[in-house]
Length: 442
Ligand code: 5AD
Ligand code: SF4
Image 1 (cartoon, rainbow, N blue to C red):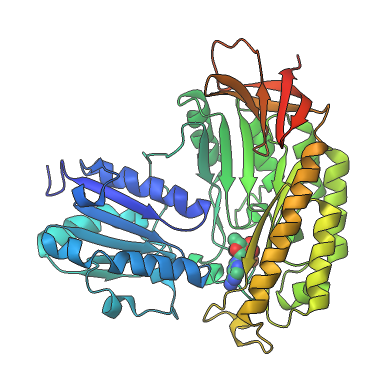
Image 2 (image 1 turned 45 degrees about the vertical axis):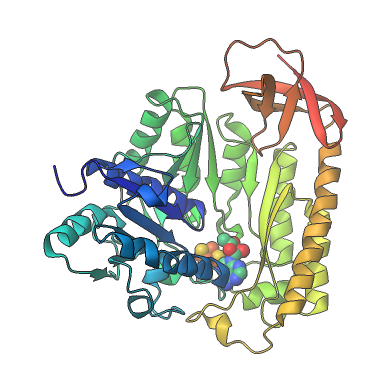
């Protein structure tokens, strides 16, 4: 028993899959204190904000949502607000959090989330606010017993941090240097998720998964890790994100092609279609090299589903640079696009670059990009006709639906099903109103 046993907690998450997974770990820590989860902030004693600082919008949202709890906090002095993750970890953040958010009781960064239980106990005993930002991880960040959001897809960290220092990006400053998890630890976790907990998809997480193993003494590569994980017995598939084009190897393409357990989907951020801009971004590849990877991947895996990240309005981006990005999109034909307006991050090199692009131009460019992507996506659907995809079979409103590795839904009318959540081949037989339907293809 402790002060928190039997009380409720609520976790609010901003940002990427890494943060989503970290929040699953936070929920595990809070449950181990005997706490219960609630969707209702009003019922909660502890509210945790796991924050993101990749763009200004994410920061502003977290800041205003925390500030809005002033009245909630004043109503009951046993209530606790925790702020953790990337926002507090920034050295040169926009907000002086301690001063600007006096209602927060515990402010910690990205390197000590695993110690949250200890901080809460200290708060209960000493009744003193806690502000602790560490320079590097204390010990293993891997906490057992995380409480996962999803019952089908499980996130598994394979590498923390980033050494790439793209000039626009704050991540290397808040997440530290690359640190790979030992292969045996990952293997054990995946095996348990698949064989004891019934997970169908394992998504391996890292800022740059292709750097996996470079810091390990045995120098295991990412392709070797993937191959090793595919030897685990069971009906499951592996996805991974995010890949950096610079480290993307031919070996990896081979593994993706040859291993049925590797999902046929790839997120390969390009960021810009202009080689000049890529150089200023410090991305270490040009468009020719990027296109060469895309061509090789498409040749090896014709049904692959591709997605990317693009930033518009990077300092110095001209109309001509921007048109090159549109041209690239038309060439690659991504199934999914994540488009962002460049957001100045204090402390990163690009924040001091000349020729910052005006907001109205960024807005125009991003809207245009999304419009083009819609057209491409419709076109991509047509290409599915008569093709066969290995899908996860699910029931949606009583109808069987095959979900492709890339997330497309293929309705399977008149299919008699007894169970769900297994893999089967589905052939697309019809496309109507942007909806795919098909049959099981044995
Ligand atoms: N402004 C806009 N987008 C950014 N990203 C990273 N930093 C910034 C920034 N300062 C985007 C990149 C990255 C994705 C996760 O977020 O496209 O791939
Ligand atoms: Fe940021 Fe570049 Fe590292 Fe990705 S690879 S996290 S964009 S610095």
